[in-house]
Amino acid sequence: MEKMLAAVYHKSENNGGEIKLEQVNIPSITKQDQVLVEITACGICGTDLKIMEGGHPANDNTILGHEFVGIVRKTGNGVQDIKIGDRVVADPNEKCGYCINCRRGLSSLCEYMAQGTTFGIFQDGGFTKYCVVPRSSLYKLPDEIDLAAAALIEPLSCAIHCHNIADVKESDNVVVIGAGPMGLIIQSVIKLHPIKRLICIEIDDWRGQKSLELGADFLINPNTQDVKSEIIRLTNNEMADVIIDAVGISATFEMAINIWAPGAQLVCFGQDYNAEAKIKPNDIVRYQRKIMGSYIGYPEDFLDAIELIANKVIDVDKLITIKIPLSELITTGLKVMKERKCIKVIVLP
Image 1 (cartoon, rainbow, N blue to C red):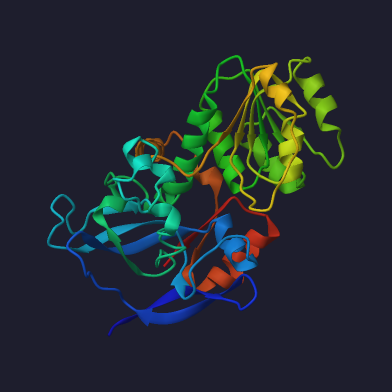
Image 2: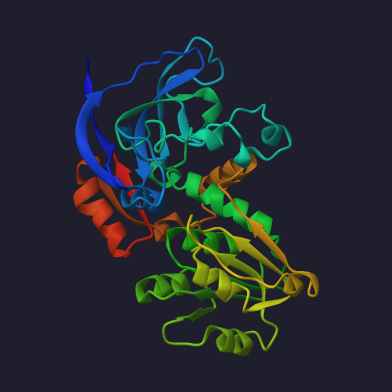
């Protein structure tokens, strides 16, 4: 069989594991609804690092990479509306469409997906040359869209979902906690909406500077500044109307509930399976506050993300730090991610 280079995850006996570049078989279509996609670009996600560190589950001997786009090369007999040569982006989270959550319009909470269906985590993904995915997971792309830029569609769809859940208003003081790659992409989406002011809270100087470059009005560093005092000063004692916690640890949650205004909304986006925090329920009741979670995105968020990139509404050049060949995934891509001196790293197989 023909071979291709792939980044394969090998789970350790204890926790986490490592990625190895290996020659593997080119996959074949085995079902009528499947599509063979030639990968043209795939983004590195912070989840890829968490997998290796044991902070996120993944299947052993799986090709990682879940933010991928490409060109259709073969289709199953049951695929009628996608043709060879079409450009496509994959929604890596395969949903069933018939469980109670899917039928209530909550596809990001699909019961089938929760069992582990994500391409690039539980099924082979995009850190390679070819991937087989079902037609239901693919979205057609406009011919004029840049395929490297299109690798941002999946994370952008998650940011759009978060923005929509936050229900941002023009008069809001918005605070984003964490200027990692997703925090900065969320911030970029929020800045498309007119708001009173956007404040970023970040401990890393490089990331904090990027936040300002992407439109944050103010930056607070918790290592050198008192967060609550600064929020009081910057908002003229109005506090934060919308808070997006893009980190998800105990400290950032408790930080958020220390700066929220009456009627505020706290959207929990970042994930840490071990995080715990204390809260006084009466602080929610008395001041009509809301705490919500934002998890991946809906199909309409994918459609919106495609339009934002195709129409150059989002400045992709500011979000893509470097593009590298697959052969440099480990030596350059993962190294830069670990050093926290990047927003998005795009792998070109």
